[in-house]
Length: 110
Figure 1 (cartoon, rainbow, N blue to C red):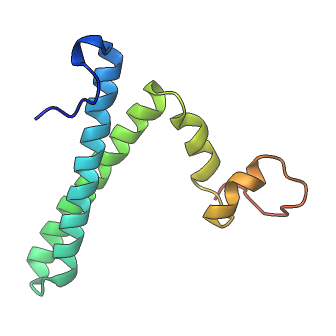
Figure 2: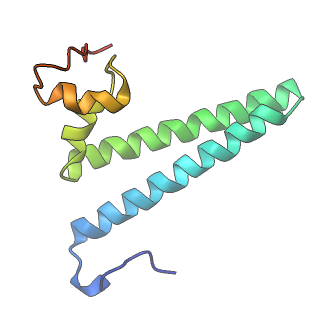
C-alpha cells in the first residue's frame, strides 16, 4: 500500500526520502507507545526491564529520524529551536519567542 498522496512519478527523490522518514517516525512513535503500555501493565520485573529497554531504543530511533528531518526538511529546524528545551509553558512559547514585549515568559534553554 502506497503512502503517497501525489503521483510517485512526479515526486522528487528528496520528497520520497522525506516521506520515508515521516512514515518511519510515525512507526517509531507507535512502537514507543506499544512498549510503554506493556511496561506499565506487566508485573514481571525482568520482562518490564526488557520492554523498557526496547521502548527506549525506539525513542532513540525516533530522535535520530527527527534529527534527519531537521537537517533535510524545511520548517523543522525553526520549530524545534522554538519549542524544544524551553522552560515556558509549551502553548505560550511561540508568542514569547516572536518578540512579544508583553509576554514576560522565560523561554530560556533548560
